[in-house]
Length: 83
Image (tube, rainbow, N blue to C red; front, side, top):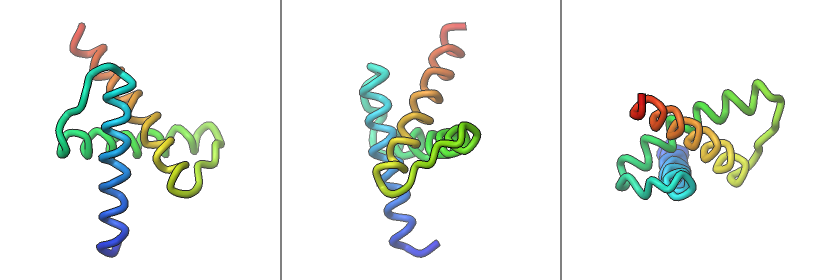
C-alpha cells in the first residue's frame, strides 16, 4: 500500500465515521475516533456487501459500504452500552 492509498483509506474512514455519527445522532467522535469507526465500519460493510452480493465500486461505493458498516458498528456499541 503506497502513501496515496493510505491517505485515501484514512479519508474514507474519516468521512464514513463522521457520517455514521451524524446519522445515528451520536455526533462526531473527533478526527481519530471518526477514522477508527470508519475503518472498522469499512471492514464490516465490505464483508456484508460481499455476503449479500452487492458490488460497491469506486470512491462513492466505498464510502457507502463504510457508512453502512459504521452504522452497524455504532448500533452494536449502543446495544452493548444499554445492556
